[in-house]
Image 1 (cartoon, helix red, strand yellow):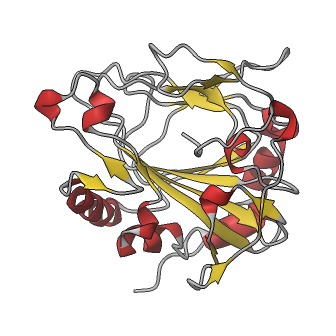
Image 2 (cartoon, rainbow, N blue to C red; image 1 turned 45 degrees about the horizontal axis):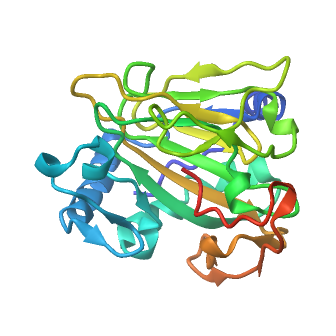
Length: 269
């Protein structure tokens, strides 16, 4: 059966322009999510995949994130992850938000186990360094996402600003060291999601998450980043890019360190 292809409504597009994010509710079914998780569980069972993740046995880990580490670029080692990154249900929404043909740059998977630290507020294009314009994230909730299990916070309106040079984050609550405080006049707000919801947001939107304070609830999510076909450069870490027909596409590597110095950050967290 062909997937149910839809785009965003005019009201959803207007909200994205105003606030910097939009939610496609229940874009994927529980059955589809179960299939994705089956493939990712099989990948995790290998315990280590070079360039993707390395997991320490649960009974040996002192940090829950060492036992359940994020997977970086699983599309490079999993056909299922590649299919999800290039899922045809995402393409018309990405096209509408970008205003042009989308190219896929990255995939990630997070377990966010109970007790796991969150990530301080940050901006994705600090890592991807897309020029001109910016990147666009598609953040798929596999579990219910709320304040208790380390859900997301966004700063509406911050997408209209440039990328800030980050401050040092509190590493007792954030596994990443970068922190971008909300600018004066703007404030963070929570975004709760149901399984199958996809949150779309641009690379300048300030966002992050708190630790998972639940006793037994994971906050699993599959996240991909995209750029418009007119992008001229991106950090080396995201090459090659992919068209939605699966063909590879390459653009120039980002040059220079930008306003924050000569940095080569690993990738968005």
